[in-house]
Image 1 (spheres, rainbow, N blue to C red):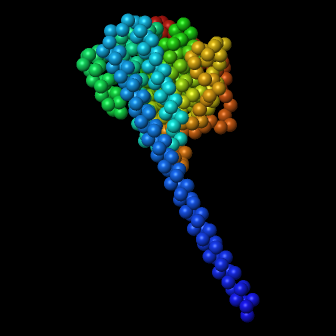
Image 2: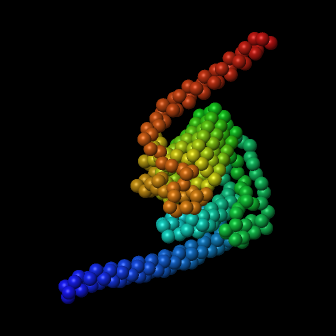
Image 3: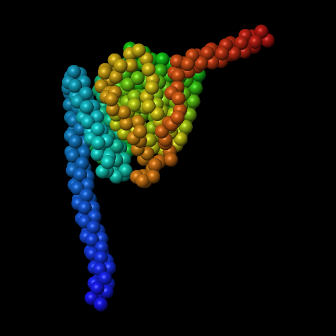
Length: 358
């Protein structure tokens, strides 16, 4: 009888011990989770304070430049320092994305975009320089001095729709053309491209920045960009670019061969395919060194889609190129030139035919 009683107690004790162990494990997990959340919240708070203070410092430097009367050498040095500070702040944001919400990332990125826009506008206004361009047509809008002050004093989280710059597009209004800019026209410059169709564009050098607006059925090949590549309203285009940061807006059916040292950003985009940068030309290595771009760091697989906020489900708007051979840019160039010649010859033949009829 005593043996039967002991046998009955063992299962009961086992169940009690198991229940107690499960309860303790649950408490341990809860405690660890609270600890992690506490550390994460501390990290977010520290980031917010640091980011805000550094933003205020940069904004103050821009205000000082707006109100000051520094000679050109000092202005150039001040703008170079501000550019480095913005780049450092961009790297700080990128390194902190692992514990920041997508909304926080987007808000901070908007702030950085505004700082960059204000800095570029101020530099172009105070240190105007003649830019190389295929077109002499200028699209300019004057800013009143009071508006300049309002821009700098406004909250940085607001959009910058009122920001305009006095410049002519480097390349604009082109169709069915092979456009090549060499290092003399590209190095350290802010290259702007607008309203092109069925073109092959090559930027052989190390631009300071590149901005593209409204391009369709085009191929753009570019050497290392020191700062940012910004593009909007692209349709069925192929890009091969190396840059510090990439921002792509309102575009679709785009293939990008990319080298980017920060996190790439897309917004209002779809059907974006991304592979590794593969453009090549004789001076590429020297341009990497001159641009300051880190060749060993490529985050082309890390893309933030601001229209897709689910952290657990991949964005359907972009994907990595898989099992796809690298394009032969030399062959593409030869074919494009040959086809362009055929198109031009047909146009000449049509003109000759029309003249003979007259």
